[in-house]
Length: 277
Image 1 (tube, helix red, strand yellow):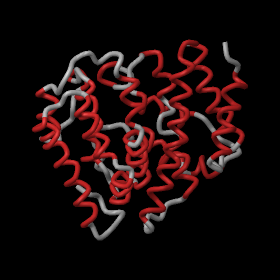
Image 2: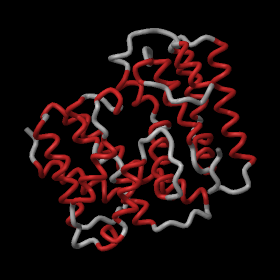
Image 3: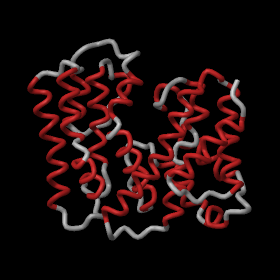
Image 4: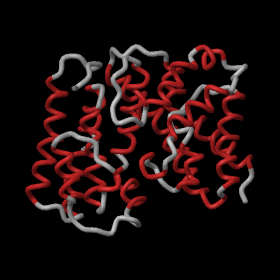
């Protein structure tokens, strides 16, 4: 069984790699949350480390969005902390072996906001002074839609999606073991075209899962995020994967058209911090 020092060392290395400002109390608390989840389910080492890497990668993607925007004026430390902690409830969720609330019955976002609010970071005033703002980002980041005005929430939602979409290979690899069907399920395709929420129980194939992730394009807040997706060639990657997973030409064409229209709208936008929809 791994020691708590193992996880603390991983956090320290990831923190150093991206020059992240974290106090000692925050580092200790994050380590404890992760280790508690691991201790309860020792077989979860791999997925816990993957979630930890994603948390730090989301910080990097948020910084890219801010830089690309040019006029998105946010406190960098608050933005970094909001991204770092957005999935803090995911570590506990390893017990349910599911990432979707409707399947597991465990709402990682609500739980994460709760445990964050309950802890006092006495040596990190900026964290304490912005606790309500950061807690809202944790609570709201995973919902189907967000209609509030907290720019940190919008940033986290975009950075989270950006990191996952530019790492599609990893996402599909993690899902392929349980998705046995081929081609595209009609309900999933129809819901995508209608820009509706795709219910996880309807996802039967790897192609369905790719479409589920592609649905995120309709929930991008900042033009800068969409431009970064374009630069990464995400639409082309999605199209190629749909071909590999036996979607038909009509389905692929419609999905490609919808995704490219989001990018075209972003390019035509005059304000990089303006919501696309």
